[in-house]
Image (cartoon, rainbow, N blue to C red; front, side, top):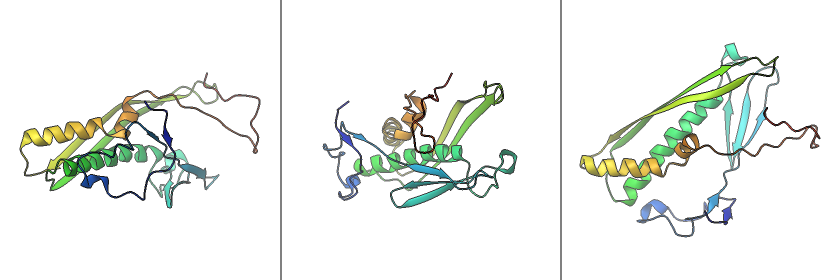
Length: 185
């Protein structure tokens, strides 16, 4: 991977789906997508996240201390994979100059938790992620199979759930970095 890093998405560039390939100035570069989130309700579970000029909200159902006003956080993860795969499907078809007449994606994420918060043994994990992609197109099946394969292998969100990534954790307490690390046991 290249050492070049892009912290802002090149929003001023023309639509890349109108060309046959992704621009070479993007290839081999890391693009960072910064999202900030904060707690809105200390008694409940409502949170807001911000990216560029967008705000989106998260909550939990009543049995998890929320009011069920917005989707749960993991809903955004599952939807993110579905959105990304559909975006790559559409982009790939456009760049190959093939016709899509529709596309839908159903994503399911299986999760579970065990242990005790009081004992410090509580853990959560994801067990499975299933995706069912529905494509509508007059193109031959082998063409659509090729487009689906390219969309799958170029879907960033799918790569996130398939590939173990190191997470660089940091935290502050009242604006200062504490001497006690919050490392997982």
